[in-house]
Length: 298
Image (cartoon, rainbow, N blue to C red; front, side, top):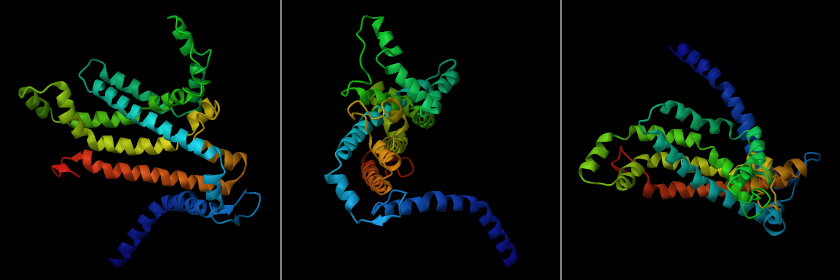
């Protein structure tokens, strides 16, 4: 019996060994070393030299790009996350209706999430919104003067954010799955009581999908704070650094200027900011997230 258990333990260990090695080498080791390097002057060409809190002091007192990148990142998160979740819920409600050919529509609406994060789509987005792009040519058909979508510092961040909003498919699928689980008896009872559609949405739909709303809010907030590919390909941080995000500042310091120590310090500040926002969402969810199994708030 003991030998059999040991053999099963070894087989189980062999199954999890690839994941364990991958986690230790590609997750835990870089995570720990980035913290160590954040207190060092490290350029990859020379051995790391301990400098204490210098990288963090420089970041908050001398680096003029850091507050600009942080402000742009917060603006990007505030624009993209609510718009993306609202649009995903809106499309999910439409796709939950009983329409002919609905499965085809569901597939078509999910496609942007498959291609949305790629470099090719980012380049396409740039051509669409450039001064002589397709969007302005379409507007000119109605006599509307072309807008400098990517060249105007006041609206460039919105043009870049639209690409993230366009990738609403994964959130939409989760909303749709939850909408299908809501018992129709709830709506039928509300109709008998004379409730309007708006009241049914506020009193039945929103509470029933609140756990999915909570999950989407957490995941989309984390993703938005780490966004890099789309804005970097479309604008490269311009014009006048109006779309320069924190992830670009980390990339430039790490791979353009080879200041790995400073880039690691920036990464840890980004990590702490994401942690604070995530903790706030978790804490606030006790007031607006409802679960069926405990008949009330979690």
